[in-house]
Length: 355
Image 1: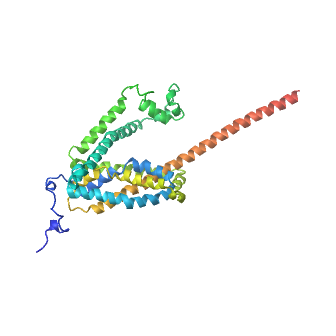
Image 2: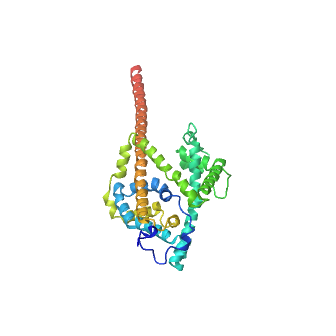
């Protein structure tokens, strides 16, 4: 007798698929799941934290422990979470409870961590939207910002108009915790919009989240690509990229470098938060989650390296400009000094001749 197409992929696991799988919501397509998982994993940890850690821990040499930790812990943990959610067709708490009732606390802890991230991430979105709105101003407000010398509590920002604008004008930070200050209307409006957008993505579960992922997962790559094209065309971009990838192999003997690599893998792949278990539970039970785990992990880490190139190309341009600016200031001071010397010599000459 021929095999049924539904079971042709292999023998059914012991006990068969759980009853919850029959009525479980599903992604609209497998692509929606991949985009949602990549969109959740890729974030600020890829764009800013990875370039910082790479520069801090030996440049290109940091890629060695980073890739090793990806193979040793990143992909295996990603595969474990996807397989658990897909096989048991439940969220984080029920998944760990089914494995062992005593492990229910792991699921609860993951929900608490995810809740904490859900609370503070809309604040990050709020700042992004607020600055995006202000970026249409001409000139940019943080460029023309005049530092308020009366704010002695922020004297560290007096020489940096961008910092001064962020703390004093955008956030309107008060001088002490006892002073609550007031609401910043623009920030509050952006905060409300961020929560409305979050609800709109989630109110129908994987159905609405999958559709939103077509934009939320692809738009950051479009922005990164535009920044890449602009960054590599700037003067000094090659110097900045060279700094990022110039290896210092002596740091590999430092265990802290390996700890940073392991922490970055955990942070950037979003393993251990329980969200991947939930995402995978909306997949068909016969889905090949091993390929998904490898694909998501490689895309995430490849994004980190690509973001590093973008960031350091711009930093290289900034370094060249600052160096040119310093040279101009030095030349200006030198000319002023030479002018004073010439005036002094002229005065001496004039005095001698007149005397």
